[in-house]
Length: 280
Length: 136
Image (cartoon, rainbow over all chains, first blue to last red; front, side, top):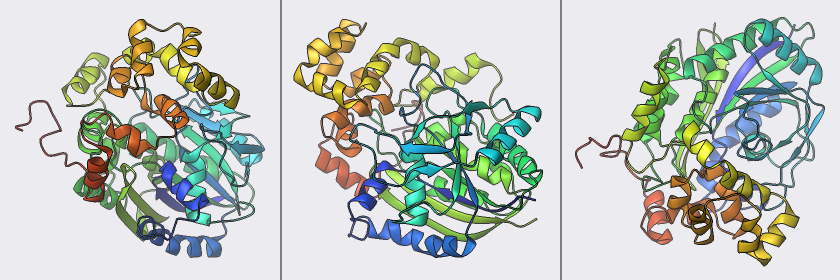
């Protein structure tokens, strides 16, 4: 039987990909950011997940304004890094796990989560930056990846509560997959940042850390945070944090923290990173 | 439920946040072609044509005169007012060779150096900026 063994949360700022690709990741600016991922890289080498269900948002790369899926699951064999305007990142192609992905898609739809199914797409920094942060410079990614793209660009995005519930449904679906697989769920994006208007550059260290606290233990208070609170407190792009709640929902009633990291700034953004395990 | 189930109440609150334009359906409709134009710059051959003659390239898209002027002058606040979304507009400033920090700082009324210094010092505090009703 497949089992969810851990959850990982991380910001996915594109500049982290640039720093990684240009070997600037240990300089004065990026060093403290990347140092917070060293623990996780060692831990991932020991954990050896078979599959990562990677929750992220596309940033006008695979999806434009023509089609805006709320929840989309990648069921393909292989995804290439997207050309986001300056050429594709020179990182390995991402290999999917179509058997588990289709199992999830079918199970979720029966469970009343009406997923959009994607067979072909390119994946942008939202997906490849977390892979670089967790696995470093590798010739091939060490696991299969099921992309799960969430609309957090055009309002309304899904509610935090719905995201959490989707995570719970993912946990049920993984548990009914017959093959013995070590599955992790990653929630990416955030933390506080605003990339537009006169309020750009907003950072809310106190709120972010309270959110990190809320991911740990048996509280489910984060699922009730309304969009307007993310907007007011964490900037217009802080709404990406609803994606963390899909991961949190998938870990069950209670979590324990294995690792925690927070750093300001990276570009316009507060970096947050958590490694959690289910503690049920 | 973590959201109001009345869409009017949900949307009304967004207008109360200072210095912020939430990318609502109304903005997505207004900016549809503006954002799709920006998206076209994902392709290298389109970037080349755009760089060769920006006005001619824009003429191929059904944009308003205001939208054309806002893009040509790289007035990103105005682009947002006219329905642009930052992730789409990023294709324009990336083609110009600007980073997010460089482009975003142009919307804040301070120099890129001052903006970068603010970020390095911990970013902009939300104090007084949560609501237009906040005391400043």
